[in-house]
Image (cartoon, rainbow, N blue to C red; front, top):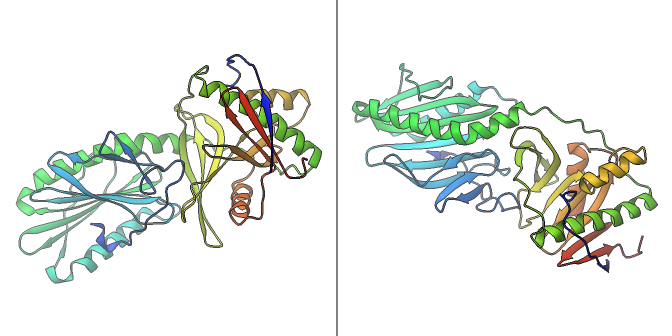
Length: 371
């Protein structure tokens, strides 16, 4: 790649604007997942699940968090273990997909019965609620001496919320109050976000790759100038930081040994944020491929003025630079994006351009042939 330095004088512009039975897996962090794969640090010792917003604080009531777990290679099946002097509670959240909720209960019962064969656990017919506004499936087991194990499972906007608790039978009233507190935690953290994602209407994704070399070259230069200028003004503090987007997990993809997760962005009010991304969930890479309208609002205006479909660009951003890998005549499908990302990771798809911004200098990166 060659670099072309451009010096721009510009002014700020609004236009730039008990899980031991489950198999635990360690995920690599990516741009959206800053700690331990699927988890981010919040408030010092709290942990927040990157794809649902589930909050697992260090302490809740008399419970202390002991472990945080990820059970799959996409960061979509997670859990938090909590211990108290006389009881234990584990909070699980899993993106369910097409499987029925009843299947989760069957698996949870199998796991518990397999884990405790020596304690002569017997299924109890009671079904006390774990609180909240959820419809619970419940399984209780009595074991010796006087110990009760419980499983509570409910739908949380397309995800499966599962609570498991171990406590003394005479303390059941207290245990149910504890479970209600954990349910409230899940509903107010993950429930709020997952509700927005569930209500967001699916976008139309019919954009095809742009293959005309001249058009691609012109687009790469325009992207570099417009978005490079936007980055420069932002770094100089001349534009306010944009509000954070909410990322909704849409599609896990396992392609030739590459575990990738496709997600879409929505605004805090649930509106479409016109941005998709695919992240590598295994290995040492921290790369995420983002597809979004090219050049922001200005790019859309230019496309409209020329009577063409709005261009979308596919880029990978690092601290040093942004590399451009493809253009589409509209929003591309998830398959097109994940296929492109897989080819990038294998070295089969090379950058077609790029840029970096430092101060008032914008460096435009050109392909080796200058096209």
